[in-house]
Image 1 (cartoon, rainbow, N blue to C red):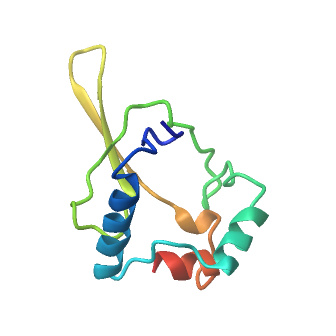
Image 2 (cartoon, one colour; image 1 turned 30 degrees about the vertical axis):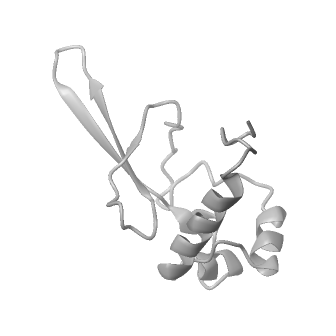
Length: 114
């Protein structure tokens, strides 16, 4: 198995071809342009630790997030997680990607995403 949990045996190439065809049929680009790859490799810094309003951001990656996007969504950028509080109530958190913290509008990566 490779690092994505996919085997290299019979059918792997066929599955890859089916996935590429499905993306193309939905006007999605299966490959990044050389410009987008160059932009990505130039990103060395993480997103800012402060929000646009100056508030300190909290790293919530360890939580067990689930996608709430529709199965036909073209961008998966919304997540939710439920937390049971000590009094037995449940708190629902919703995360929405702040992509433009790193990827600027009209850049090569933005163009690929669009």
